[in-house]
Length: 231
Image (cartoon, rainbow, N blue to C red; front, side):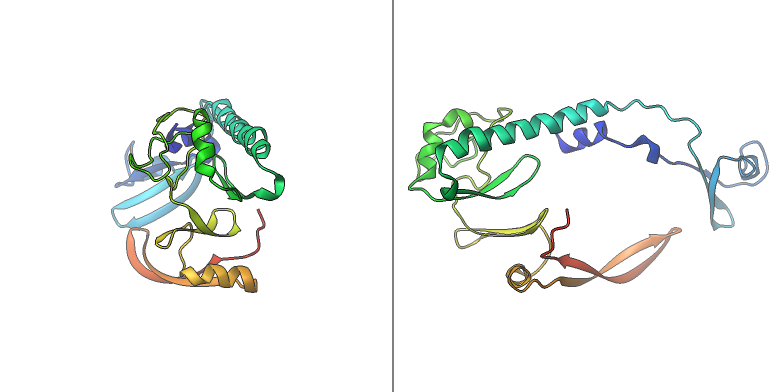
């Protein structure tokens, strides 16, 4: 399922906003017809001919299938836990297979073995290898394309040689000598500095913003990397 579709099932409709735009003051559809309403939350005047009135929700219709979203999360966790405990930990000793990072539907391992891709070939029913190259050096068959519930090697046969994990969704991986994936903006060396020296890294950025339809530029400094996992 696409993340956009999954997100729609879990929307918090209590946060929905009702905003009405007006170009006149008098009349049935003018602003004065609404500002006396006790449900008015705020009023914003853009210029002499345009204003907006934000209304509070006086009625809430719970029409989102929240149970669908919760079931998707639970089923995803069940598949991930089943793969970890009933497959990986039964194939390897605890010292040879260390889980270094996990997300909702992904796992990153530090594995010590002769050839992990041989294990993938022997247990091809557990993996989606359809994105491997046809002439991959491990002779891994390309099978199980888009089969739900199977695990997939996102590197497609390229061995991960380095992993630096700082906190949730903040990590860097290195595959071979050229491939680099960073989940947070920052210079490559900052990840190791942050990890080894317990140092928080701040970065400045310039951006264009709009407030009341007036565009302006701004500069802000934000926390980019942190070794303290508080999630």
